Image (cartoon, rainbow, N blue to C red; front, top):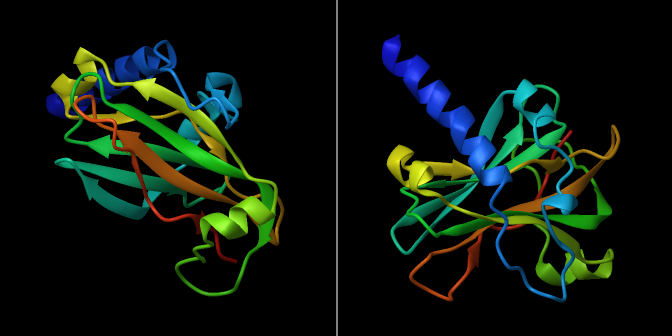
Length: 173
């Protein structure tokens, strides 16, 4: 129980530290903390691991709301100080399909619907490194009862210029 409280306190401090440490982003995609749709509100939902990918010894994870389906966040496991993380969200809406797992549009599909914006990037702090993980602010996931934005989690290690993202994800009915 004590460990859970300590981890909860560390997690709260990490969220505050992340919100205060935006990193330099690509100039051709709207980016920054002002492109996020939520900084605190998304914490009121349970989150499910939707997609993940390994990159430079880190695990990039896309988490989506599983109760209200309102938001999605990006998370990195085994994070190191200076790593950059962000979450991309399409401008266009995609029709949600029935069934488990959602759909995975291509970059070209997302471009055809108007491109995307970038929530972040955020720079992992020494506290994130100590905790071993970091998480971004949230972006909207579902646009209506039948349509969802496409979202993906991304990161760039501190020791590399090589960025990596999960597949795009569109929620399901």
